[in-house]
Image 1 (cartoon, rainbow, N blue to C red):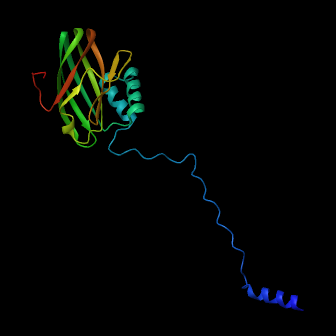
Image 2: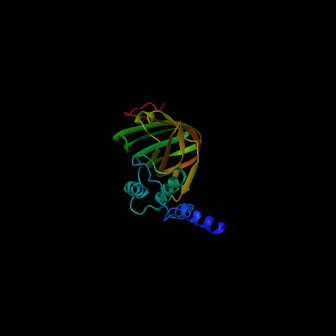
Image 3: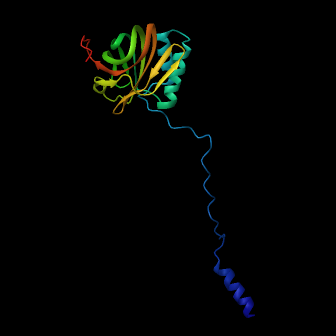
Length: 201
């Protein structure tokens, strides 16, 4: 009788409809194909930059496209680029003059000029079409100063050349297709200005 009374008491102590609590299911792991973070809106897409480079060097300029692709792989998406032309010559001491247009995602379009001396085992002269990728240019004032012109990484594909030049955070990647006769190596700098000037220094 005592056992039966105890069983009845325990049964009555459990509220009607009560169920044994169960732990919540574990959170699902993130999907392997989750979308990557969206690139900043103030940068250029690779296809648009390649199209702009082809506008400088001609449709189907394979060497230029490969150098652009390499720069994107190494540095990501630029927030500006320069389209222009350059003439240079050297006999041990060399000079270069260039002009073009800066296209900036932040500040729009503006003219840009550049000059620079060089010294080295360098003889000849050439003219170049130039397409320069510009990285981390948050203020155009950071472009108008001297950048190393014969230093940094250099790449060659076909008749095209590209160098990686940096000052502080700003990185410039000039891609050039030269016409002329030039032999040698040199070191110097390139001074970017808002107006044309004769003095290369």
